Amino acid sequence: MTGKEIIDKAALQSEGRWRPSPGLIYPLLGRLVEEGLIEERKEDGRYSLTKKGLVITSDLESFGNIFQKQLDVVMRVGSLGKFVTMDLLERVATIGSALSSNLDRMTAEEREKYREFLVNELKKLDEQEKNGTGKEKVSVE
Image (cartoon, rainbow, N blue to C red):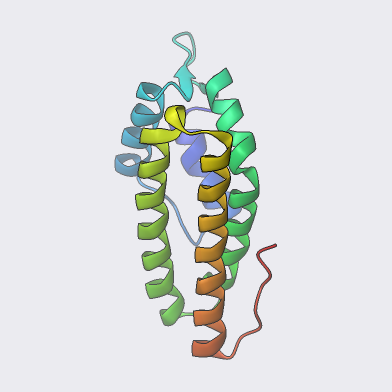
């Protein structure tokens, strides 16, 4: 997809609740290109995953599914959801930076530890939400 298509798809998938700005998407795409996770095709400006990106994607696919479920729940709880979402996004960005800068040097065991850490963080968020809003817990497993 192109950067614009990515922005449009995010808005569509979030049912209009979130439309990332070009100022967010394009620097992120640039970083992913620098990391060798994606490449931009010169002929049409579309980005696609590299082999390295595909490996990492498969490792983190379950995290993405968990994150999406959590984000859907958080977005339904109103103002509290906004603050919880901001906190979650900050945590994910921090963890993502650590992962991307060290992923090439990680063993399979270290990657599994990171995966377990991410799942545990989402479980904590689940508990906070359950205790703070009275909403049902969404399983992250």
